[in-house]
Image (cartoon, rainbow over all chains, first blue to last red):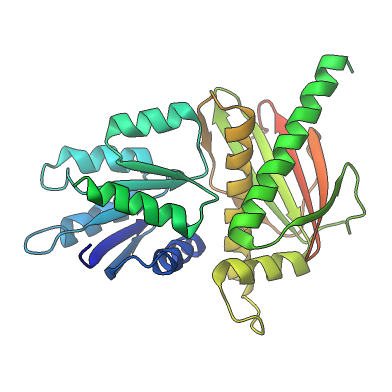
Length: 132
Length: 156
């Protein structure tokens, strides 16, 4: 796996820090980490950082966020064909079947429910990027 | 109270404690030592987290934690040096996230087929009032925690 450029989207600074550390603990090769506190900020980062020659490899996104939530973010992201292929891994507390089905329909590639361990994140990331 | 209601409340309480245990074990490296209805917690609590949920069902979740437990769990979550104490702002952020996770994990267990939206967690100091509903007092390795869930429309 090549060194990754990832974006972490969560309104909680504590949770963004946790995911950052967890990615490190999971021994994923990370080159650069970007952060955003909601979907609007995340779209700005994507439009800035996902253009040639550099591309984002993966986005970790929460669901429950103010301003623009995770579902709206995935929907908006998929509207621009330049960004439509960036994989999104949702990490959220809401693990109901209806939610997971809806997220897949919107175009999220993976879903992890909190609480989650580093190993689960490592497996999901390999699964998602392996399919690319 | 009818037998069915009692049974439903017991299932709900078990799911609430199960959700809390999962979150505390996996992400906060701690565990529940004792659980009960009205446990020997030290009230009033200095910190309360509120999360409301809407969707197929609506209601409110509240978590109250004592200062020692909040500081210790925040330190574990943030990965800070054991001799360092997280700031008040950091503790509030982490406790908000903890409340959010327990509420979400509980709803995902108890109402597997339903669809919910959770409000951003609101941290209130000191804890403010009770809402009735299902209640569990927990004694953790670091201190005390109270959890409550009430179904139905939330005021305001």
